[in-house]
Length: 324
Image (cartoon, rainbow, N blue to C red; front, side, top):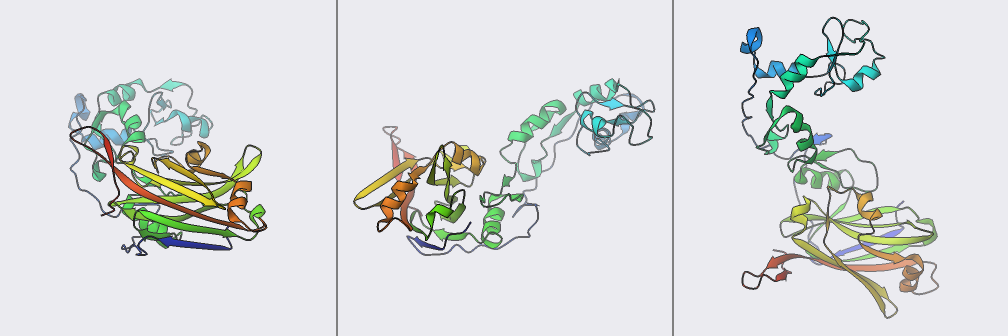
């Protein structure tokens, strides 16, 4: 649900300009080229001269095309498939249509144990090589895996690297882009009682060579409606810890403040929201801040982002407020 009026003022007013990329569901602005490490197997006999990629293809399920992990099933004619797809095909071999039964392909499972393969994100920069059965777990946590679109207003399935997602947010979701580490936003809604469960992501900020997403939304918390503002870092959690931010909202001589560390976009928008990790304003308080007859929401949220710096002499963490 969109607001009737939203005014966004940046401390600098300069819009970020960045080249757009193709809008594919899996896209990267640039690809690092890395040679994949050689795959070594312990296969002997007639298959010893076959390339390692052929062995890897043998471990690909013919139904879902994903890599197979124990238990690997086979039919009486030797055709294999993964345990998940065995249920999906109603215990019939998808190749010869014979009944599968409960035959395990132990030989192929043993072959898999002998494989060492590069992470599937090696072309994005990951240099790691893993035993076949350890590879899947690593890839689910790999720092080089693509990021999901951080837009909160829809279930967007786009993934990619940060430069691509920035262009995607700007061009496809029409998100405002601003440069600078301070901000001053005004949220206006003529009938605030209609904005429950409304989600806005107003701005992507560019400062310190990084990108940050500012979220503002209304939702039910317990029995009462609340407004919440929070910041997410477009990068990994380890890098997010190098930054801090503050938010402030007020009116009628009162104010609420929040200070914290931005969450990585590896954490979903809902996960951050449900953990209450941000500035939370009860609706009655928000209407009090708005003044007047409390029939119109007029909130001004100000804030700043800074990079934490550790003093080499004292070990004390010192804020760096410069955005350059």
